[in-house]
Image 1: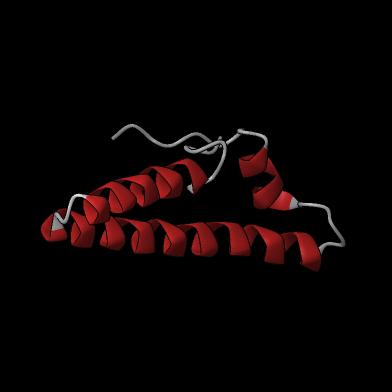
Image 2: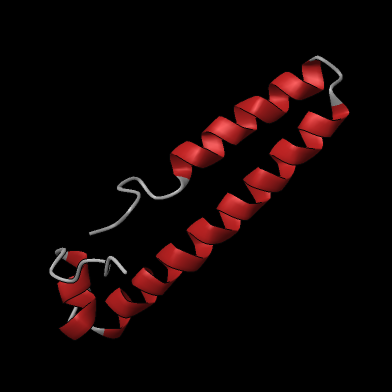
Length: 80
């Protein structure tokens, strides 16, 4: 099962808000930190969910094999 059900969009929105607040209060170090977080989570969103979209395209919109089992939560993270 996915760790983030809505992808990274809530984290992106959160850090965008933090960035805006930091800009408005002239807190440059916090604005830089928030901007880095936004950039990171946008990259993760593209990386994780573009792979899923490629898999869907490869199978005419249907997941198969391990991709299907992961999507339905059959595979869980190992707790080592």
